Image (cartoon, rainbow, N blue to C red; front, side, top):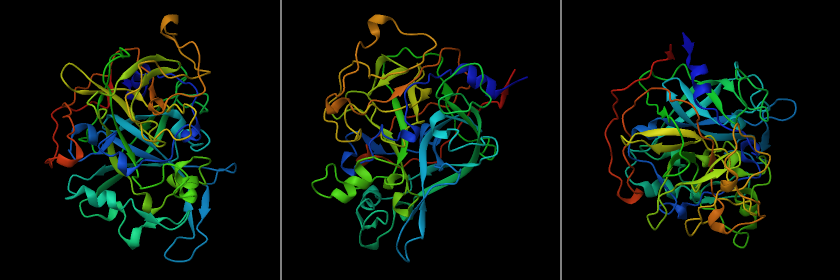
Length: 417
């Protein structure tokens, strides 16, 4: 009998490279509500893929091992302080096991992987009657760190129909020396981790791991983030630009604070406004380049492809976004980027791509259109054989129909022989 842990590790040898812990310094801090329907949408389809993905919440710790806190310096109704935490995406590849990036659950923030309990949250907004209500909560007032919904209104998670579920998981395997120490993973080095979530339902959705990555073709991604109206430059509000749009540290950025205003919404990448599909851009140092739109907090989210049966499969977790000379990877991106892969340095690969396919240099800046490329690493061995039900395409937010409860006829075994 061979455990699912060993199976996953062998099936998905993701590649480590240059990453920033919980995206510090490599991502933007802004997800503008104005970008809905241009680069992402709220997920209201009740699809299999949307229920096979979730968000892990990780405490950000100081040198002593204690979770960092930011004082509110205000009385009621504000709390005395806000816990500092990071968020990353996870993709379930079996009812009780999920894949994320190793840097999301690094040794600094998860020093005891077996005994540390991490909250993994799933979200469902299919019952929200009007999505504009969710977006309206993104209007905020106040000053850092005490941003609140405008006029004392509800936060997104207080809108009728908003639902969330929490399960608790531990790190069963962490495969990166850079973000280690390694745990239950000695055969290779990669920015990948495996979570074990024993209390999750055995009937809960999951996605299979792709057999291979051709490094070309369309890709999709579910991810999770607050959606706030914040400035895109410092001219309208320097205070909010400094403490949200521009990322300088975890403690000084509102995204990382556990505040009621930071209610998480389920999101999904969509094609470019002209209809062009998001795609892999070819081999890149440390993995495969994509032109997916994402922000800090998107690391670990599953980069997905559709197989011949129109089923979603996991290619790998998102590793990082390229900055391209800007700290704001989530600023508006007007056009699809070129097909050249993103640059990186100090990457480690089991096998290097042909010289003709590798970028020869890493320019210090790129056009805005190239800022939000996400990289993945591709599996090189056979898949875990778990054929779930196909995921249906998600319609655009303005016309999304409400879906009934999801069902499944396929379920994965907890171990293989």
